[in-house]
Image (cartoon, rainbow, N blue to C red; front, side, top):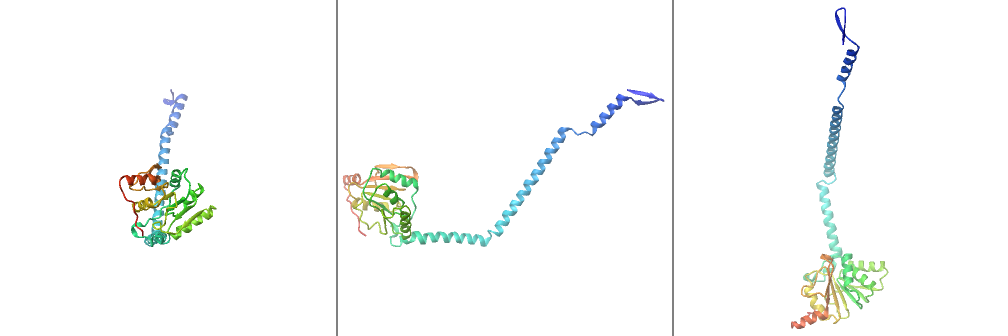
Length: 269
């Protein structure tokens, strides 16, 4: 509403109030617009921060590669790794191979706990003497002794592995109950053992099965871990994959060979 004073129209009280409200509202910011701007600002700040951190990480990684693993550092790392592998070969593996022909050499691969358990499962309810051919660090012999096998003997050519096996026997207070001998398994007389365990490479198993057929007593049991004998049919199998173990009865094997007319001979070396 307007009032007329001296011919000039002036706004009334209600109109003045409405104009002031419009003026104030014209300077206000829409809350939704303000929220959007705040969100955009936060996103921009976060993006800049991430980019800066990535730049710092890349710079740090580049500096690490340049200073810590430069050409000389990589050469040192490679040489050190190669030296460690050679030291393991020269100190632990090679000494036992010097006295054995190439085709009869067997690398040392320790049996896992599951493999040992599977072997002992196949030997359950058995008794008498046990020989572990290529006994390595002696874990099979120790476990067999604790289950009552006596004598429990391991045959191993490598002097370092023999020392390790004897140390394990001493540490577990079984030193007088087990025996580890540095002898060539191809020259050992196995006729006194009713239980044989082997963790050997497939390349030597065909020759070993001939020796076992000739020398072992009639009631002997052979347990192979990791690899089965190529020409024999097992009487029992335990485990899966690389943990598997196979049991063979010497009496059944001899009967099978005799039915086929196979003559059992082994060459002396």
